[in-house]
Amino acid sequence: MKLLIKNGIVVEPSKKLQQQLDVLIDNGKIVKIAKKIDLKEKIEIINAKNCIVCPGLIDIH
Image (tube, rainbow, N blue to C red):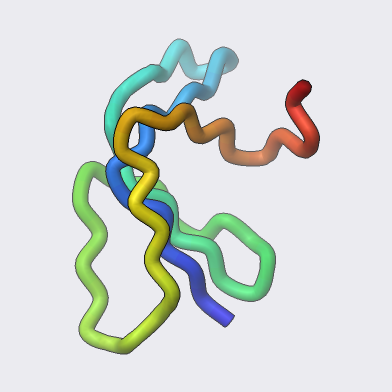
């Protein structure tokens, strides 16, 4: 199953990254992080505008 998280503020401290990006997940693994990911296939999309996305972190609280 593929999932696309769009427009989230991606935070990656080790790379000093904090910007609005899309994150593509395939079968539970992050496969792509980019400014804009457009797919022709129909997949689940989450609009994370104004939300922080921390790829690779589990249960951040």
